[in-house]
Image 1 (tube, rainbow, N blue to C red):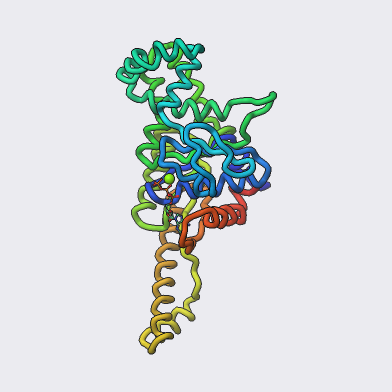
Image 2: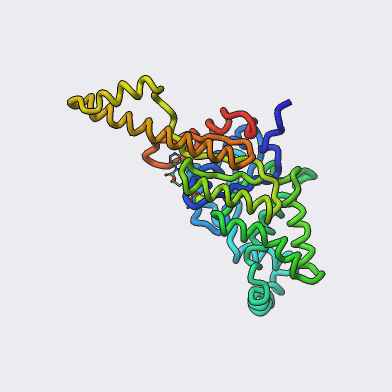
Length: 313
Ligand SMILES: Nc1ncnc2c1ncn2[C@@H]1O[C@H](COP(=O)(O)OP(=O)(O)OP(=O)(O)O)[C@@H](O)[C@H]1O
Ligand SMILES: [Mg+2]
């Protein structure tokens, strides 16, 4: 039997090195899930918003907004998350505004430096468990998480607090959040990388930290922007022989030889990642999209869906 799709988890955390395509992959994943009839929320974490604009919608800001049918986005900021947390604890807006916004917040931010992370993560995980008319509000929450080190810091906040904070409301929050993060029925982490030496090294490192330090269930490795092999060995030999021909054949052959070399190098890095990281691997194509916009996200989404497990709809 095919393994269950990661789209059936309630929370998918997308992370990886800076610039490898996390936001694009998060948007593509959300689109795939929304098109299969799921109600999806994408959370960016205090970011220069990418996901809604990539889908051709205006940025959501800190309030949840529909970017495509069934697909909602939000940019979770520390200020707004703090405000919501304060309102939850203190219940009354006037009290919050009179007390919490000033003295208490400053005090807490001083004594608990990771409070910003805790409230942002808390807001996201609250969405995961929130109910509407007796059923979960979201079928799937996708987090466009920060890159490597910042993601580890964010996702480690509940466990770190459990190590240090005495019993009380803060500890109770850290407790349910940590339980949700490590529950394989709820959460999966998707690691994004590029088919290049350094990004693959960083992915191997990050994967180790996810296993040993965070204990979050790992779901998939996505190797993004992989050039397709266009020429077999025989064709490559012919192309090499034509490289010095007069234009237009010579320059075209040169370009083709270069493309073949790149595809070969990328394939070697994909193989290296596969060997080092014990996860289902999804390869996403290098797209020649002049404007990185919705059409690019659509193409990535199709590639995800066509790949079958672990993203089968
Ligand atoms: N499959 C692909 N093919 C070609 N270019 C790509 C691909 N995926 C991403 N890119 C390029 O990489 C850029 C960065 O992508 P994206 O913003 O998704 O990365 P990120 O990991 O979220 O970056 P950051 O760490 O800054 O948040 C895109 O604007 C696009 O130009
Ligand atoms: Mg991003």
